[in-house]
Length: 377
Image (cartoon, rainbow, N blue to C red; front, top):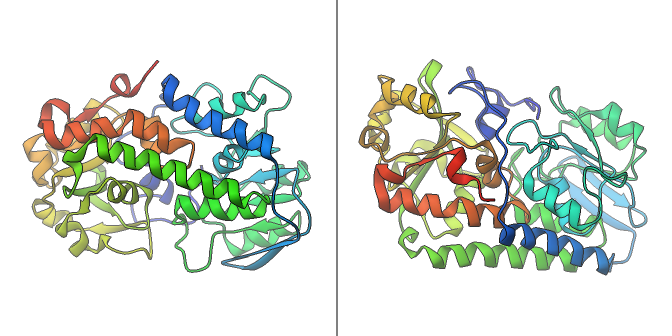
């Protein structure tokens, strides 16, 4: 995905949100979903395909750059950024175009949960019904989207700039992220409901939100030891000894909250208890104050974890010092909660929440989520 015009002095917005720099060069690691969680997303997509649109048109949707009116049910939908394609597919519609996944991808340049759902719709990547894929390495790919002649362009979860919106809306009705929400800060529930409205499938969208929430609540009930435990979710940059705390506008803290956990006071006091932007910088000089029951971060491999442990400042984070920090070393697992959607979250509950619980209760013996540990086949 692209840098999306959000940078810190040392890190791009992309690397902080997904986890692609600072701890080493990202490796493209694939993970297979289990039969149960694959069925959850795939069956929802197939079921919604049979229902079709239930709302009447035209529909007008407000967003950060004004409002967009959709005159008739869209049939050729192109998406930008993350999660929007997942939602469209979960609602039973195959987009004409979607961004290629370059971090945490399977062999199709997609996420495994997305691949499963497309196959359930008869639009697997090896068929002529599959969406066209385009790179977003340098930003939203206006040219390739235009070539598809879509009748709707979705960027409900995105950091779409006003210039990009102007270009895209000249091609087709375009929906940017909601007004009052930070760029890349649209909650997955809101993304689902807005896209459901745009596709004339509001009831199906509401049902998706309900069922996904139930899946998270079930995971929370399965691991009651998470209730009231404190968490910190962070990105650690070894090269500059930088700590970036993910905020309440980010999907990781949102999931931890839904699991019954509470943001650690040190993180909240450090500015992470905000929805104005998805991360805030935290002084590494105060790293030893970041006390929590769960310290969640990502790392590309064990060597990257050891680099953190050897860093003069980052190694003073209590969980790092004690060897109990949860460093996720599988990119697909990272994206299952970073790119939260009704397709990815059941996969996350099945594959990653058990690791979170193990890190909280098991200490260092369970504190590294590796590619092997997160792959279910």
